[in-house]
Length: 369
Image (cartoon, rainbow, N blue to C red; front, side, top):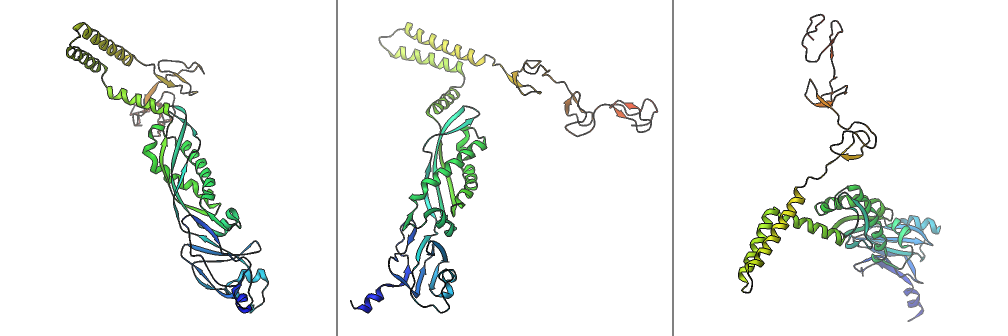
């Protein structure tokens, strides 16, 4: 190679990113010790953005298309380099290509169980997992906040951080939703939509936009699932007396089919079945103590209690119907909660005497009220 060919090879005339890997977010064009020739061709394909960086400062940003590098279409770099008008010499600058396409099927999941309070089971440890997708919507913010000046950058290098953001926001979402653990599966879609809204700001801080978010499963601890299975089994059993009769019939059939058996063993089985049925019936038919809240201090008390053991006030409040709409109001209420009308006796508009609500004429002046 001659001297002219060596010098020519040091000048870059075409800048492009052709080998885009599936999970690659950033690619730095290999300038190395070469210089970019003024008038070189910059090709930015769909789903890409090119950023020129000069000595650590972000200069010009190029959207998809074909660009000829000249001082006219490099205003920021021209200013940073203090180029005079008509500058036509080669120059050095770092060129970064950033992928702006959507990265789909990104997995997320709880590394450790998330604590939440449930109205049926109390404190629970739950696990959840799903998928999400995102894209770079602010390349300059993404360059400043995330990858800096790395030669390349893939989705694996940021997903662990974004997973932590997802779990944090999801924990808040589940706590604020007040959805019972037994009903989570009914609200996956609604929770997923709400999750996108909560994740917008954390993603935007890094120049990213979350496009989709889906909850695939929320799992409960094994002991809670076991309790749920027991509750389901009790519901399937239904009438305990019929279940005891069925158990007795099964015992008699097994005894009849057993050549070495006798009716005594069948009687034992039948008696055990009947005893079990009676025990279940007694347990289920035994009245459970009912609870209610004190209308004054909201303490939980027995439904039959007339006075609250916490505040000492009367818990049975007498109610009377509204004479206008028949809504049941507290006895001492001044206005009806149903229609808003004043309660108590009426006032005669003629003589200002107090008249009972049921009266149509004033007993003092005889005028209609």
